[in-house]
Image 1 (tube, rainbow, N blue to C red):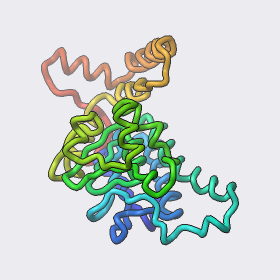
Image 2: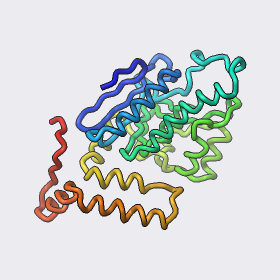
Image 3: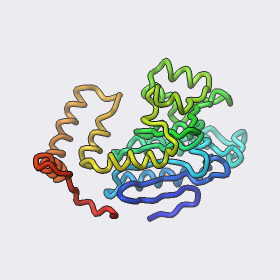
Amino acid sequence: MATYDEIGYAVEDGIATITLDRPDVYNAFTRTTVLELNDAIRTAGADDDVYVVILTGSGDGFCAGADTTAMPDWDEQSPEEYGAFLWLIQQVVGNLRGMATPSIAAVNGPAIGAGCDFALACDLRVVGHEGVMREGFVDIGLVPGDGGAWLLPRLIGESKAREYLLTGRDVEPEDAVDIGLAVERTDDAIAAARDLAAEIRDKPATAVQHTNRLVDPEMGFAEYCRLAAEYQWECVIDPEHQEAVAAFNEGREPVYDRGLND
């Protein structure tokens, strides 16, 4: 398993936890952090023994965006150099959204700027009492270059998304569930995310991944039906589907052969 300098990566009982690990700066990222994040997300997504991925931060923060003290002097860089760096950040969002494996953001502390976009890119979000989410790009004269203005309207609707994007206002933890951005507000976001991950993990894996793929607001209905028929057949012939049906008929809990840690 790969080791990293600025993130943590651990797999336990079929759940991969990726932790931004720069707590002294509320997990603000450097270029190294972003490179490691991309590698860890790709690693988790390709691992057949990983059924759910949790993304979180160490200490009191989720991710405070870019560490501006570690950035180059962009006035001395070319547009191509700036674009190449931004592309690396965009790939974190793209890799999270591109995974069939479900992902959960455990927003244990502030998620700001690109850090907010990392949380939005996950399939589900659990927020702690300090889990404020803020795009905030307009406050410093920037646009949401990492995906926020594309993600947020699809999650909470265009009008509400414009409110947060154009004002830079915080999405307070107490509002996140009400507007459909988070599934739960809790004292311990990481523990709640693990409970949710375990619930998802214990479902038939092929069905979970294919269902996750089918949740695509850009997909037309005809394409949905075509893919649903293809995926349904793959589920029908999957041993975990057959075990789930047998367990249901026999009135017992299903047992899947996955080799997970006890």
